[in-house]
Amino acid sequence: MRADTEGTGRTLWIAEAKATIALAWPLIATNLAQIAINATDVVMMGWIGPEALAAGALGSNLYFAMMIFGIGVVTAAAPMAAAELGHRRHSVRDVRRTMRQAFWAAATLCVPFWLLLWNSETVLVLLGQEPALAASAASYTRALQWALFPAFLYVVLRIFISALERPRWALVIGALAVPFNAFANWCLMFGHLGLPALGLPGAGIGSVLTSIFMFGALALIVVSDRRFRRYAIFGRFWRADWMRYRELWRLGLPIGMTLAFEVMVFNAAVLLMGLFGAEALAAHSIALQIAAVSFMVPLGFSQAVTVRVGRALGADDAEAITRAGWTPLVMGVAFMALMALMMMLFPHALIGIFLDRSVPENANVIALAVSFLAIAALFQVFDGAQSICAGMLRGLQDTRVPMIYAGVGYWIIGLSSGVLLAFPLKLEGVGIWLGLAAGLAAVSIMMISRWTRRTKLGLDRSPWAAVAARIREDAAPL
Image (cartoon, rainbow, N blue to C red; front, side):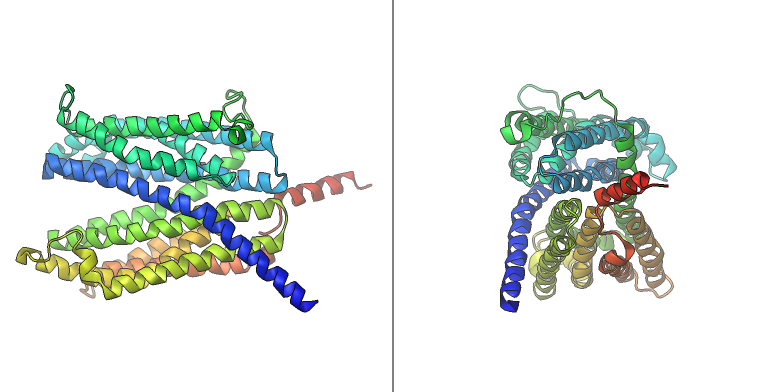
């Protein structure tokens, strides 16, 4: 009997591993496609010249800070829809209503973001940037800002198909968007095929067209594929569901803040690194780009685990929650450990992708990048763990406390220790990177600790079970 039980348990874990990989790998590949789109923009801005590249970087940082926050807010639709599907496999109406309110939240976010981006020149000047550079960046963001709304709508549709565990269409569209974006930029930035050469604003318009293409293509799939069409995602779009809208903001606002805390601490690290000179900043950018590429894998696992844990939560299955959480965490941490080993054993080969090692002028930058990459190797496991564990807790619809963990870990522990090591202790750029590692380690430890205490904290109890209990209490005789 015991052997049968162990065999059944092993089978369930293997089945969970297969389901996780099937859901995660298209999400990972889609994330890499998004990285490729962003990299294409940077490369083509560099073709215009260094000033255009600098202005584009300023405008992009402002835009992506808002975009990341907005993605965090609408991401709340993922655990909500997953729990609804876990509770009732064919929950068409609830899923449709959740996605509709995610669309509404996206529209709500865009209004203040558009106002801010339209006045980005004033914002950048107030942040101490050179007026000429701020004006050039503003010419870019005033075009780029209109990409926000279709980008948010695409994210909501991507959440929808991921909640149904069919994310491959997003991968197909993301792969097609890479050459589409490059072609649009080539035409609009440099004036090919009879179009005017618009420079940086052309890159912004190209991003708008790419976002519209991605949303339009995925919307076409959603309304034509029979498995998606039955949900009628765009049906009765005008109907309000204020309780669900408030619930989405209740869950989504902390997710947006959590992502903002992480992105902003890395932006702050860039500004601090600039104080140590152009070579330190260049080395920092190279090491950070390598780490960012490897991070796409745990990010994909994080997106997958939110759905898997959310479905188990909706089914009120504590054992399934356990399997759904630990399986991708082990996979993601194992991958990041492998990446850490590669960074330690082959740093020069990785850096050589970005810089010619045979050029003597690059020697100092390469040496700094090697030291930064060694520290990046140390925090790879922590970075993967905190991302995946955040997804696990989102699946449990637990977002407020993880937001506090992120604020404390990234800013109070990470940034303050980085500043202390960099300036009073004179470790400079190495100190900044050690601070980032400390922050990521602190966040990952706090997140994992909360996950292990989920039963004690009552986090793994289905929200529908709680509703049923309240109904029973109301029905009980006084």
